[in-house]
Length: 101
Image: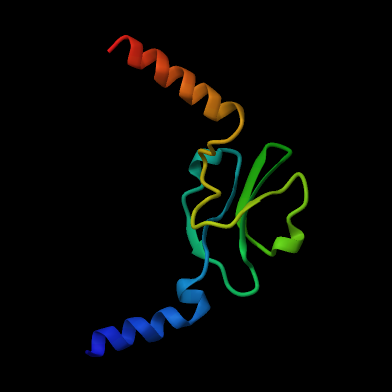
């Protein structure tokens, strides 16, 4: 069908089907809601907090050096990142809540 052909051609081009990331420069990391498709050769989403400003967007893997946090899944640079202590806190609070329900 024509629609199937259009979708196939549309998704072959990298800008249309590439990695998708949140992008912003903001003092409030929760306000970073703008979405973008990363063009070639940008293959990572990134987040970095410098002097109180959260910056998010697309980046090449080779430019992912500390303090820049990079990831490689769609929208993985969201405001809520579940890693390290945050995961432990989430698990403990969920367990305590489950005990009382």
